[in-house]
Length: 336
Ligand code: LMR
Image (cartoon, rainbow, N blue to C red; front, top):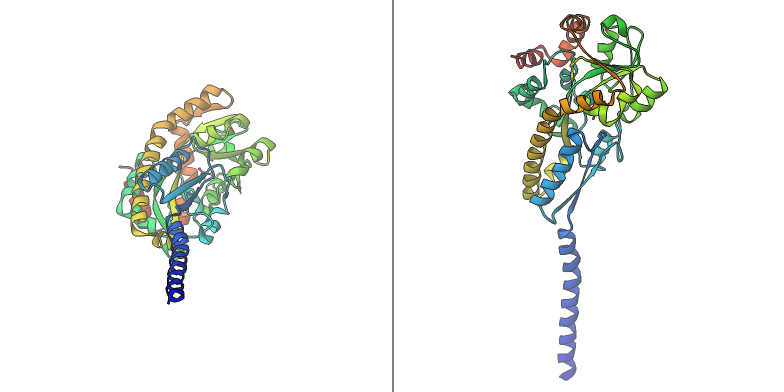
């Protein structure tokens, strides 16, 4: 009898231990936070850099212990040309490439590269908020990519080694461009020689003379010190560099509903914060470039702007079918 009772007690103890050993790792595993890698190619002080840090702060505050956001700036984790592949493979969860870098995924977003299409960042903002602009956030769904929102950087200016005021001055110059066919056509339209290069390679290419010039925003020019290896900046505002914050659709839809809700809210607020920074700090970055007194900054006169617009107008015509005349019209209307 006694033996029997002891055996039962022993069996019960063993069962309890077994259950605990199964439950413990499961709950521990269930409780371990979801790691979210947010990778980008620019410096922390830029609008995108600040927005990514803000997302980390807000997401971890809203979902304490449930998510950990790791931000990788300056192409530390993945650079241009690698980040989209990494997103598809699940090696990174959030990226925010320039709208110029989606040509392989949709022809529609090329609209943002058309020269002189938008008068200023406010027009870009209005177009992005419009039904047409919002519909483009889903333009890559078929490729397993979900657009979480638009993030501003700002209007672009030209920088060159030698002075450049009019389109004719660009003839024969080598320009670094983002991976965009529209930007390639834009420079060919003025007889220049465009070269697609990753952002991380721009400073070196300018310094070594592989290229004579490039186009970018004041925050990128200042934070990456392009003005230190360029003698001349034409304040053209001839186009925009903005971003789409994207995620992998499968990963995003696979998240628990409460996590996705918390992340969506954090993303919305961090984008709003980044857009404010972009609009508020654009002039401040320009002032820092001027204060450094390395590159000569020249305003584009109305006459020279008219000459550049005229020289680059065929580019809009060239891509009208691919992008869609209706979309271009909607963008032009956002200048009102
Ligand atoms: C560039 O390649 O010049 C920019 O798109 C980089 C960035 O993300 O602002």
